[in-house]
Image (cartoon, rainbow, N blue to C red; front, side, top):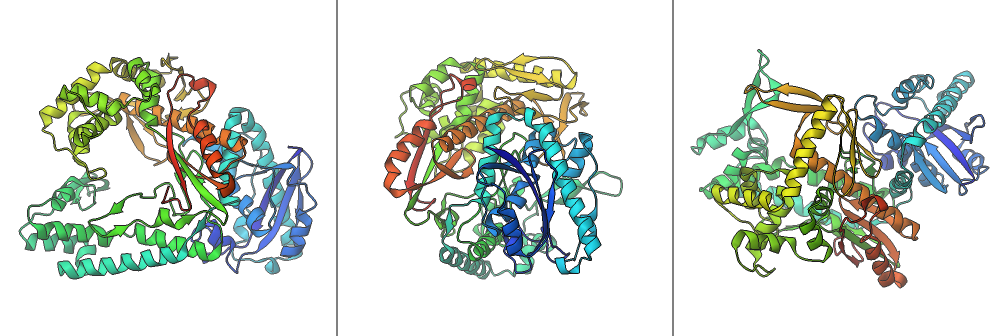
Length: 625
């Protein structure tokens, strides 16, 4: 890029109209939206401020060479979205200092510009933005507008200083990843089938009404915990309870509360009750209480009415493992891919994401990436070789379990092998394995006795001794982080302890802020840290650390693959966990698919020897892929 352009927009907002109630698309496309002013800084020159009408502001912005520049902002999704979607101006590259800071500071600093510049001792951020609440441009006096301009210019200068403080600590490939994440929002390519979403919403609402009619219970009785408990008691069923760690009694002890969440064991038992009436009532409670699907449909229908292209908002390093998390309440990281036969519903969200005219969607998923990374990091050569040669590790392990030849035709046996290979690599025990295998996946499940699950666990750990050895190294790493000691481990690649963090092979870090030792009531030593994602103290042990490392390294590999695809000229328009989504012209579809598959089977130099693979498809809608 020829130069850096640092930008900051100041926009009108009020208690009724602002980002606490609207996502960026809704906010910017609202008739009340107004840019009060904007500041731009070219390289290390002084920041300039402009305030005027929309057209005057656009003309002022056009004096800068955006296409030949890397544009910088703090919380780029906001400023870049305004630049692109409101003013129709697109940059050569996008740099977001908020994204750069997130994996470096965890819970210790915070993500706001104010907190970050204080941490780096870069200066002071003003408070004029607070004084501007409820004001549009016409409401400012000339002196107030000048003061607001100085505030905005100061923000730009601080953002530039913050960039200089962060730039050497962010791997180069991650700068390209951040650029891609920004483009998914600011330069979207996917479109929405709004009529399909409206039909789905209508079906969902009718289905909820039908459920209430079938069970003969009012919505109020299902929505209220106390009333639902009363319904169960009237049918001779004791309502399930649990102790809530979040709700305390007067003495500060965990308070006994109803266990009506769909994942609570007591609620699961109600769903599997021998009395079909109880099953129906429990299912009706969950369906009636669940507003997530309905709310998301409503939000996406609104989005489809505001824009021809759907932004794909992801929060860079939003999860503790630096994986991407969903944003804007759409949570496009969690799009169900199943058909719910029992309730007669096909999840429409994937089907409603469609390619623009003359294009198709290619979706490529990294196959068994976590199991492959775990085997590679721990030096489990037998499993590595099986993956590298395209063998079926699920059948191979099932053969160990059942003592006979297993093929894909042996559906239940292979399902058991799959559950073990994917689950037992992170120190899962026999009780959790039993519960995991009971859960249907694509219509297949296995109800095994506990002693059989114990045998499966023992078989896995004796067969894959290097993975079990990696757990021991993870335990030593936790001890080293807690006690300020140096430690390096890993066979496929080296992971290094540095303070309360792990430096991964890619150069990215896993943070364990506030890591501390604690003893439970039985005198056992445990460790916990402050989780960046949940902002709560979270237990960490060797199996969990192994899972964190594997997920983070898998994320780094997939991110590198995404960057290679973009370098090859492809538009990556979204990401769902281990799957990358591209939009390509129809005339080059088959060649593009072949090239993208090839890219997804490669690894960066630091992951040499990791036997990655992939599978994918292309179609007009994301659901069809």
